[in-house]
Image (cartoon, rainbow, N blue to C red; front, top):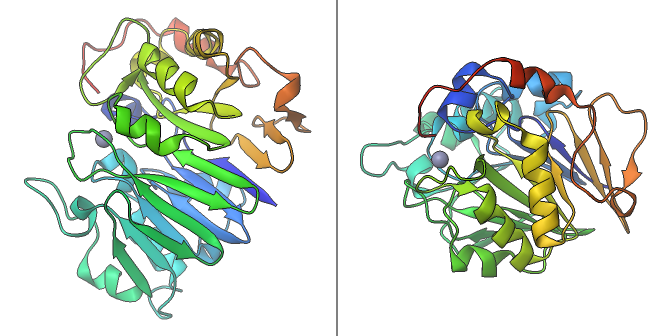
Length: 297
Ligand SMILES: [Zn+2]
């Protein structure tokens, strides 16, 4: 079985500090278990998802911004049996492991020493975690050492796009994946540097042509407008089914790709649900909370 659990679909400073969406990253189970970008609240969300952090085999961190790394050290303690058993993998950008400019490092020497294999990754580097292949992919972000992850599982590849502007290298690096995780930080007509807005995401999705795209890392401005409309817009523009990610949503990869929203009793095939959206309609309350602060992400 290959299964992704969304432990948080919020992103950017203001969605993070308000926790209008959780920011726990993504958990992949495919015989081995990997936690990608464990931001604030990861541990709490794992408990809600009934996932055991002591069974994690590897932690991947794309870059050194707090919405992507804050729970990494405590999750490393879980992975290494409280640092008593040297085990597991940690793959991360230079900024996370060594620091760059005024940011980082995000993980102490003490915690790194508890892990069996620590790898600083740059685009093009590949590591094996059990049978799962992890290829670091490029990005164009304010942390210049940011990497994405193209992950080869027993049921095909997943493209985890990190925070980035729309860039040709990012498109090329993700072609051929079955599931594309898209960090949609800004809605239509609200582009900012170093992040994707809805128009950019539609280009990315249309060019990559995954079987399904999942919108993640939703910024506050999207959440307070109409997130479902952004997903529908991208689906229409790209011709690729684009799902609005929800906290605790599960994506099961087999011959077909099944999506199960939080609280839904059973999954359904992606072939049966074109038109974006993603479950329970629980975003309604965001519309009632007025305008977001005037902010960048
Ligand atoms: Zn960032």
